[in-house]
Length: 406
Ligand code: PLP
Image (cartoon, rainbow, N blue to C red):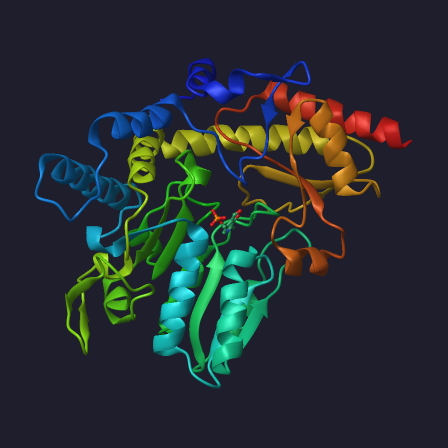
């Protein structure tokens, strides 16, 4: 199936509006995507017909809500081709998934003198938890660099792997540069050294087909809201052998088997990592979002978004004074740029007044921005509901910024 852009746009009510008397152009998809009517309806239907706490009741509504919740776990499992549904843990987002692994994996496996490898292109969510955990446990965080195109220095990373390395934690796709890292290759090399690999899939899962069995990574983390699902939903995929071995992350209801005055036994997977009442309506929305993506087809989405990327790269690099950051040939659909020496905030504000929503600043990747020695970037990130005409409007807005500062 190919992308029917007009039909798709009808599904997204928020895109129908005008801002500053202009049609809204939404290019902040790497921060959060908009939600189709199907997702909004799933949330409403849940509250109108099925609302109830899950896993704890024998009555009709509780059983129905529990079944729908567990059906979603199956849906996620299939979507990312995990081996087992109990390897899917619901969280409130990529950040929580990453903190869960850093906390629990750190406690269990990381000791003084050990090493963790990450990269300079990480989002703070996949950097700070490892940095802090290594500091607490007397371990060393090693940081692989990038080249001028924004590709990971794979030789450097390979050279860092040794008998002290306990884990490699890296992003699947950079939220600033768009670089798609060669994660399958990295996992294969790391596994030759018996090193597990965690992938931050926050920017991967909405743009590319991802397959846990093919990638063979040990952990994969992502957020629902970046894949057309509600905020406050997310997933941690972990291989059973690790999830079994890790201590629970939060304590409370649902994650226990038996509680006595002097001890507690913990529940089986996945519940061991799902303490407390979860975001059930959000998970209903996540199910609808996955069905929506499956209907469109991830390969079709990737192909269309690649066309948008190529068009935008061409348009922007044709404007004198525009510098693009992140020019890897393996790239997801976003462009990060600066216009001359105009501060990204100033540029972003003018672009916004032209009806185009872009993100400006360090994009929660300050180590990378420092490495690039820039104040930040303007980032336009595309989704399958965006159009070539909208990219023309971005180019017009960039020209306007140039004019205003000339
Ligand atoms: N990792 C990457 C690569 C991201 O781009 C983001 C958000 O922008 C995150 C992690 C954190 O995601 P969330 O804020 O949804 O937890």
